Length: 161
Image (cartoon, rainbow, N blue to C red; front, side):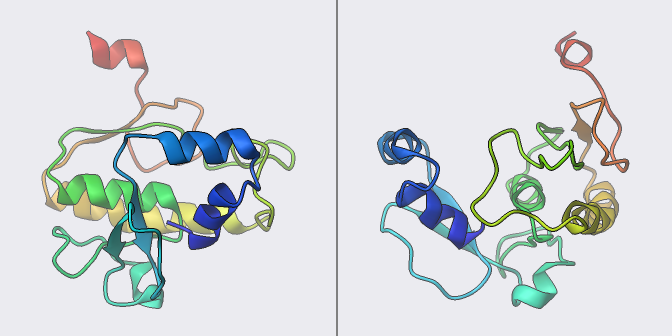
């Protein structure tokens, strides 16, 4: 979602092995552009709903006018899954908290998050809860230790049985 993040990957800011894996990946490369930007040809571009400032608090049911971003890739991915008709949707890696200064499973970004960033992210998900319920979509957070309180939490073993 964050075009800076994409450039950091391609330019090797996360190390040459990450850039190589990204380039070699056969997966669909989908990016949500929250502003007008030019991306490499092999990346499918999703547009943000209306505009950047309105996309924070958007969770449309179709991609016709773009999708909401909630200012984090997890929110954008959740909105994309809902638009594509996924049901149920299982959230993976939605910790939504700081562990010391650590905010991600990886070493972090070249520009670190501010201390209140994750708290703001969580607030945007309140709309996603309302909208997914209206759409009849079940969303389950597979991280019992997650600080995102709005979706029911289950373990992998619970959903596999």
